[in-house]
Length: 240
Image (cartoon, rainbow, N blue to C red):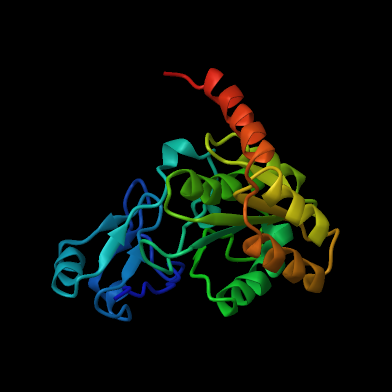
């Protein structure tokens, strides 16, 4: 039996009045979360003892986001805070976007769920100006860690997020602009992260690209051999 994990926004958590202005997760924040599901703790937040007790009693998993030290400095209101859906063993798709890709991210998130894939929404969660590397990293990192099967990233052109994601070891991000490039990136290059340019393609085309990309298997034979060479190059530059 697969445990369902709910999407839950963390934007309503009020900050604690301290010198560091750190947020506080209380039992009230967990009140609407069904038993056995998960809650992503906002970056830098504190968890009250009563909240921990409530989580234990109701078997709610408290999930930490990527550490702040791994992300460029940014106002707390715009830092990526993933919301989790899905469970271990399912084909979870991570989503990430900056302000330029926010609206398309929301559209694609619903579409991907309709296709039957659980979604991890790494933000952004509004139209406020933010930095695309933060959200590209947050989603790509989940793929590299095995917490997501694949990821879809959206910014204005799809190029910057692709560059940022490809800095994460184990990630093979491809910027696709039609179904043919989506198929090629999977069959020939084994891409595990798809990036899209919201300013370059329509929502309908984006849906077609995503559906095709998610459904296309990686090619074997010469394609597998060449992808291994790509990963061998990466390994040469990894610090030990």
